[in-house]
Length: 217
Image (tube, rainbow, N blue to C red; front, side, top):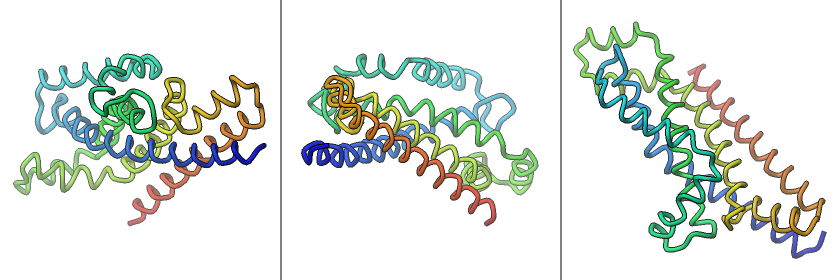
């Protein structure tokens, strides 16, 4: 393997980490509130609202059901409008974020649903408002599950970032495609795949450990 390829792989790792970090951060900035809305407006919850829950749930389900490669192509005009271009690491962050938002929303909703009703009843009996109960009781109680779900989401975004290479998104996915697939360079292909697997495993392990540590606290 030439020095040029090695440098390209190192750059690809860095680009993959950048895409994964910013996409995960932005997806949680939007997905977390959406998940809270889905949870709190569902039947029997603090802010039950059938109409709001149906609208938000439908949007989330439609977005989540789209295959990511199709979403990449559909969002090219929007990506170009937001960042001024449709290829490169920065451009890939846009579809990665949008693709991850519905996953985050449903993960957050599922984590909040695990909170025992007794905790909510206790908060309500003390006169806590619905918003205060959600922020100070429900979310902290669901934190271990939220952390574990967060690690799964980051790992998912990392996997999506590899597919972004198909439209010139950069990162390890682009290297695997350009050098490993198109040029039939199997060592490069297997190196990039191995690096992606290791990165996913490390992220998931970190999330599991963080979740267990929070449970002990």
